[in-house]
Image 1 (cartoon, one colour):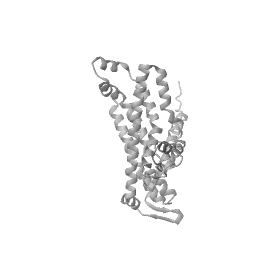
Image 2: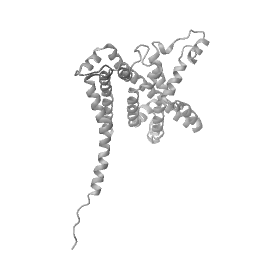
Image 3: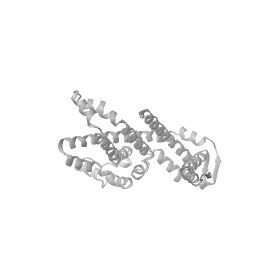
Image 4: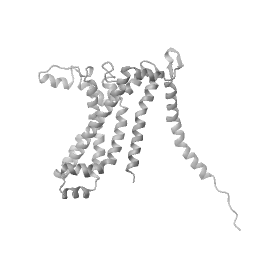
Length: 298
């Protein structure tokens, strides 16, 4: 007669312990900081002046009622939209050019082009920001040096109205290789049969790209654009190193406004409100990404 043994609980306990680890991580590093930010956004918290009063939504009213704060929000979306669109267009164009060169002239020339395009990736953003700051300097930057050689007057680029757009140009220069590599890998991994079938049916290059290549690239494009959008939206390094949000506040985005309000103005309650406002857009982007992925899943 066999005696039934009690089920072992060691495996169950280990499973629950392993399951608890990610929840503990989320609680400590995400849930609690988020709770504190939201709680501080409802207070007038200025420890340097001994102020800590509950004021409800007053910080949000002050932000949305201030024309400069509304400009920070619009400038953040402008920066994100322009940089993501330009980087994607250039990355896709360079990827298609690389594939065409490899097909018509050989892999050797395509490899040389690829190495040139990804060159900006060797610079960390802080170093690239410093490098381009020197390039735009009025008296010894190479841009003004070229302008002076052409007989034109030099210009203080980073303390002018052009500063914000020059930072966007630097961002596009620095992050286009990231999208380029993703899209190049996707293009090289496409099955050749649908493309050849479209050519046999008489489709030209644009029709083949629009109706065959682009639909097959769509899942990769959605992922790449989501990653790039979230990364650009929280951009800080180029803006801070090159302009510090200036001149005045002409290149201040939400991230810079949050930093300045907290660590320069010492208004941590208002800075927390900026932080809460800043978090809304990434949440919407992630929800949109999940919706698109759900539609693509058969």
